Amino acid sequence: MAVTHEITPISIKWQEKFSTFNSNRMNYVREILKLASDPEMILLSGGFPDPKTFPTEAVHRLIDEAIERYGSNIFQYGDSRGFLPLRLLSLKYLSDRGINTEVENVQIFTGSQQFLQLVGESLINPGDRIIVTKPTYLGVLSAWDKFRPQYREVDLESDGPNIKQLEHEIVDGVITGEAPKFIYLVPNFNNPSGETISLEKRQQIAALAQKYGVPIFEDDPYRELRYSGEHLPTIFSIAPDHTIYSSSSSKTLFPARLGIGVAPFELLQRVTYFKQGADLNTANFTQAIFAEYMKDGSMERHIPEIVGIYTPRLQVMLNALHEFFPREFTFTRPEGGMFVWVRGPKVFDSEKLLPIALAQKVAYVPGISFYANSDTAERNTLRLNFSNQPEERIIEGIKRLGVIFSSNQ
Ligand SMILES: Cc1ncc(COP(=O)(O)O)c(C=O)c1O
Image (cartoon, rainbow, N blue to C red; front, side, top):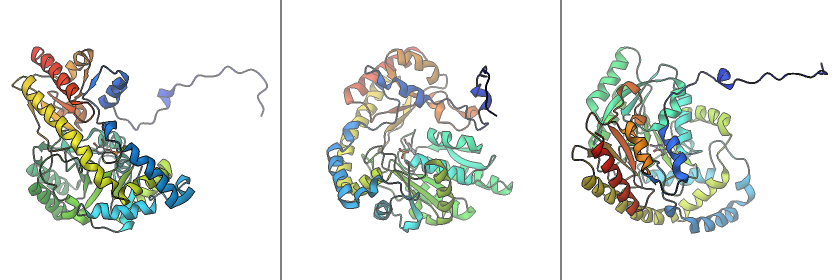
């Protein structure tokens, strides 16, 4: 029936319409990134690569090569599983990491963040136990909170998760009929702690996964950013039938929103179904550029340049922390990645002091953002990023924080 008389519109109360999928987690990273437009702000907060590391000139050439090789197909909608040439090239990339697999087990995602999200959507029911480290990657909590899992935390030590606690969590779940759905781990240069799981612990974790039939999600975007020490075998290479593996273009090319996911075919079929609902497919265009980048050896040649930029930044940050932070503060000494994790005395509260730091033009992320369960969050911790600022600004930022933390404990 056509409306012929004037209507008084009823205003929409969006809050009342919201779904019950909720996360009350305060996303400091997002909040603090809003400050990025202030050129005076020393950003030790986000996890951004330095744009200096982006191979801009090579990308000009790679785009031409991709169009030449694949034609206008790269502008078209594509296969939800990923651009086939990139999936095939990924097999070699993965095999260099000890991941020997078949193309049907490899798919491309819109960032490894999307792979995390879709695996969560494919596996997690409300109340399911998921084992995470304490602390863990904030982005995974944002991705999975809405599925309402029960996060079971195990302490993250300097060489990886506490193995006793890990076994206890698994056994407790098995006994009570609530076996953990999976264990989520970042093996190299963890976000936020910067540290790496030792070979011994990788083997122990793999053995536990096999013994109890619990899968591992090995989230490995930082592997290439190693500044000292030796590459360690992936957990996947030790327990291939029990591990889901994730890698990314974000740290070796640029955040082109490209993730590489490896998983059993039956799981990937389900993940693909959800991906079609999320974005149909990842852009062929960026996938073709990444394929060219892998194919012509540009990636192998470029990684040492990235490492060359970040290595002194890490060193400068560690030296400055040693020089300017109060003695009672401890900090991790990563061998790679983008982050250093700081722990103050028990009474120290990094969230409370953030406004003072921001007023003095230094940004960091309070550690409480990285704990799955708010009641166990340690308020005396914070995460510092060293990849995004030149050395002088890192030193100045740490100096300012040192003064603030010394006078406000
Ligand atoms: C541990 C971890 N996993 C996944 C991601 C997401 O990476 P991507 O850019 O591939 O979505 C990040 C990004 O910082 C990360 O730190």
